[in-house]
Amino acid sequence: MPLLLASAEAFSSAGFVVLRCDLPFRQQRSFGPPRPADAARDRLGLKNAIAELRNALAGKGHRFFVGGQSYGGRQASMLLAEESLADGLLLLSYPLHPPGKPEQPRIQHLPDIEVPVMFIHGTHDPFGTIPEIENARKLISAKTLLVPVEGAGHDLGFKGKSKREALPSFLVKEFKQFFA
Image 1 (cartoon, rainbow, N blue to C red):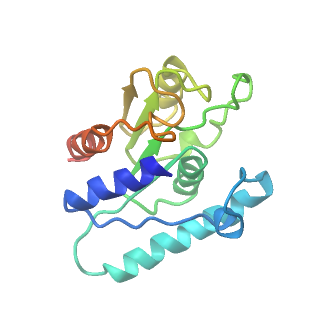
Image 2: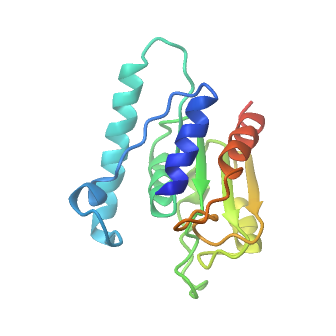
């Protein structure tokens, strides 16, 4: 995902240790959407990646944050609702509901999240409107922040050759301020 690559580079350049990982469903298939049956295994894969990073950085005083874009962010949020494995959560284009189906919200686990959550969301994202994300934020007892990306869809302006070059650096700046 171009946005994840650019964001990882921006965070790394800002001094963060970054681990990018493919969820198990993506390791099995290089294209296509995830299947509902993959979700528990994908969360376990993410949990294992977090454990590996923690082991690699043990004793170095690092804070740990988990994040993801779309389905990956949803799985990260579900994992942190199950277990507090990180100090915060970064959700890029959280898929609040299937496109055109706001009556099917994916919010059941949000009240169980106990760490701060930063949402980055396009104002034209078909997976949830800005007001819908604002309402979902209210379900989380920890502090939250919504950073709208004006005019962007679900890809946050990183589709094909089109890239919002300034967005990753802006995310790092907002992240540092929010999680200070």
